[in-house]
Image (cartoon, rainbow, N blue to C red; front, top):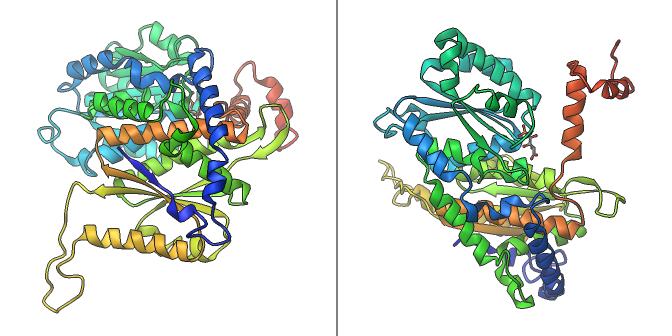
Length: 465
Ligand code: PA5
């Protein structure tokens, strides 16, 4: 089980700036209230907390695994088209659970599973590179959008669909298409209903984009790359059970709930003016999760209004960083700049590989150690140097990186986000700011029904019509 260590956030270590144990204990009653509220919300299918049940219901899992067996040896590559919550979890899973050079492996080395590319932007240069690089005849495309209408995703889909038509013809194109989208509405759902794809998967209505990695959004590409998605879900379920999701809690359970403690510590430091949360992964494989968390925390907690409709303009700013690399880029600021941050170290206890630092012809203190030891020493040294400068830091530790621990991590951070939403008294499951940007884009591109946004845009942009 992954653990959360927070001694370096307490006033015993962080003088003047740290939290007292008393301060933490004062929140035990609140913990029980918030946990109870969340349990009630999770029961309500109409609220956006469907993510909490995904590890229990194995939604679409058998259908995904069947699909994998059917396409596995027929295609060579999967191209994922999506953005935000429809892409970041896919990237994080691939980074964590597949070799860095997976896409350069031979088909035998991949055991017939597919190379994975995720295109989550509309950069024309990248699009062109992908067009030139991919053998479209051997490529499956998984187009993912909960709304089914997102401009970026549809645009890139049209680009690659056109490539397919050119190379395999209209009739066969559909054999290359997987659509993952919401259950009822949206352009992609229409396409799925009209037979534009060979496979379609549903994103449950009550699972929002950034909480959807354990739905077909993240599971399809993971399974096609040979990641054990059942183990991933098992890890998530273990964390749900450890945190007693769906069950009653007592005040004494607070300290044993890493998701709540993570949320609470972040919240209390926010109240003390530490508005920035840096997630610093001490593992290349976990860096994708720092990026995934950045969206989860920012979009969920950055809100104009509180639950009562008051203007609060609240929310911590998440930053991602990579250890040890960013010790030589960011650490100076974190240690000596404004004391406005909490640093979350994301660590792994035991790396899959051990690389010794061999003897060098000239004697050197490094010889005889390993890269593992060096990384761990640097991680500890960084924690100590931050603590010495009274900079609060906490530590999420995975025993090792595998499907189970990654499932635990995902669930812990999703649950922490839900708890944090309650602590900040905001709705963690909407994203009006993102929706407005989408609507302005539609208006600028002439989409019918969005004319009123064009009028509004004229106030801010120099547009003639
Ligand atoms: O978390 C969210 O809701 C957003 O980040 C979405 O994932 C993102 O905007 C993409 O939306 P969609 O999947 O509907 O295309």
